[in-house]
Image: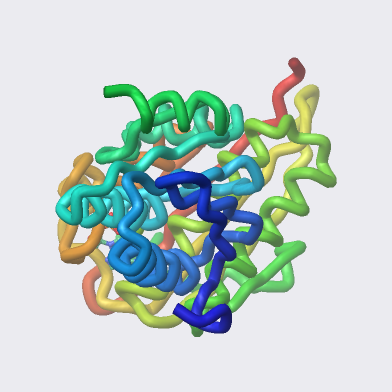
Length: 120
Length: 150
Ligand SMILES: Nc1ncnc2c1ncn2[C@@H]1O[C@H](COP(=O)(O)OP(=O)(O)OP(=O)(O)O)[C@@H](O)[C@H]1O
Ligand SMILES: [Mg+2]
């Protein structure tokens, strides 16, 4: 995948793909991100994708749906997905709305995410 | 109900600090950003800024999805002996909603790719929530959030 096709730059760390999301997730971006990640999982044959959402200020219903759908697709390709760094106000909002981010392993930070991925 | 729907749909936009016309998908993010700025400017806590921004995001997306076009209007209201309140009025002249109670049910959706928790979710996030809709006329959703001392 060429650089131009990527909406979010990714970093390969051992057998994982690290995805630090540094931009506002609007509908189109999150759809493009899904396509990008699926292509990268296939090309790079990674064991896990780690989404770092420390910079993301709003996660609403549709963004959650699309992220969970991506996690389900990744799982079907034999790849784990971890989400880490959810901000406290975002966690509070998701919890009150009753959104669960299904399909993801949830980690506190990157270190925790890698520990989850490498645990047997 | 019918009269109220028309009344809300005809509220003059001049009465609001911010008006975002929802026409394209990008306008959802614009509306969300404006709401965030207003809430921040009024000294809302980060948690409440996030709730207001999330609610606006849901309302703007519903307009874009179900009515194609509409408006998000936001204003502050100063309550007597209380902090400021943010009011968001989302209006569209789309198809309207036949059974409002039904669409407020968690998980109910007519859209294939969604959780169906936009409206029921923001109802839990806000201090005031009302949907007024009439088939053939349009839909207005009014939500409010008070500033809390913390
Ligand atoms: N502005 C509107 N005009 C017409 N129908 C609407 C409008 N807003 C919501 N609806 C109807 O109400 C249903 C529930 O809306 P709600 O926002 O709760 O969930 P959703 O949009 O289906 O999914 P989600 O918001 O979780 O992505 C919608 O599927 C749609 O049928
Ligand atoms: Mg919705």
